Image 1 (cartoon, rainbow, N blue to C red):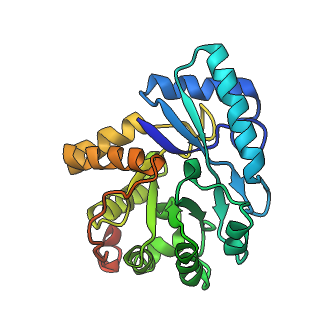
Image 2: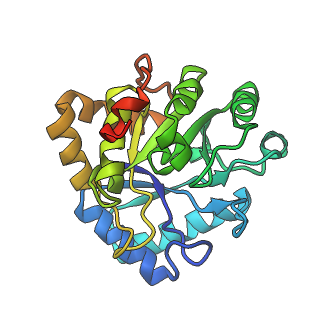
Image 3: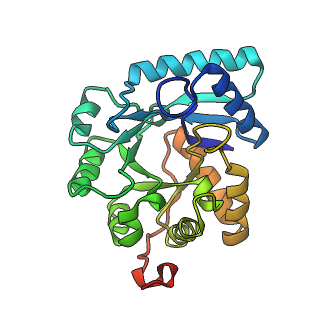
Length: 254
């Protein structure tokens, strides 16, 4: 498996604190069948600033430690950038790290809202030559209440990534159910761990793929796995026409 979202680089955000933590995470990943991880430290989220050049160096250093420890996991550079008004400027200045130096770029929203300028920024990112990948939309309260927000973004070219722990039910039944709805409506394209440690925020990729297979079939499982490979290779990913999620269907509350 390939994990395209992980906070495994040590000491630079709220993920791994030390190299020992990073190695422990990599061992856990390998045990679940993960052989490649895109390191995606937080950037511009109000607390952490992790620039592209630093991330590349940190990634190189961690790979050297993994070789020494004989852990069969390869780390690729990436970044999880909180959406902000300077993103296109930062792209032009080559300060944002795309995923493995491809056209794919992570975009994060705060957990409780989607800014009004998001539609324009997602468009501008595409004009700048990148494809925005919205991370963990299933955990955003504004999108949960108004799924049409995400539907419009995907219709206009954005992709999305659901968290493995969400699909595995570790964030509760409501978020798990909404994750399934996003998959059914072709509103998400990747499954990734967003792992921060080996305890409270682990990988859960094996559990999530089992859930995906049981609820949506082997074909969907293969599609998500293939999309992760296509992404790190910089190729076009598989996607179907997005469908709207009717608000009244969500959790039967409306």
